[in-house]
Length: 167
Image (cartoon, rainbow, N blue to C red):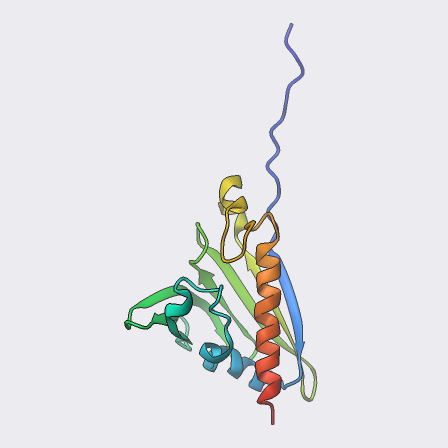
């Protein structure tokens, strides 16, 4: 006689979704994200180089790279633009995870000078449970909510920077 069959069920790894409202119009908000990213992106702790980072830039075209540049001039690629639809959004591969994932950003008007910025970070199902629980820029990894907290922090910085310089 055998015991009951046990089924192994993989835990789902849904996309991370975050959003913020920016007090600036869509073109301004999009422009701040892609042209001024090096001014507002919180490289501590959201980069590979930390205090060595001197710039973050986006090559604004399909196939363009998102790059952090260090104090010695070396470039570290964060990802590549796989979809490009200015000023409405873009999608990029994300290479800062243990397996490549994908980040989609959308910019939607809520009014004359009000924009909803949404991010969906997906592709987590490619990772093992160990990878999902591993530390990243913030402790506790994907399973511990670090990407949810991280994207909220990043979007807050974007909103603050876009609003401060809004006409």
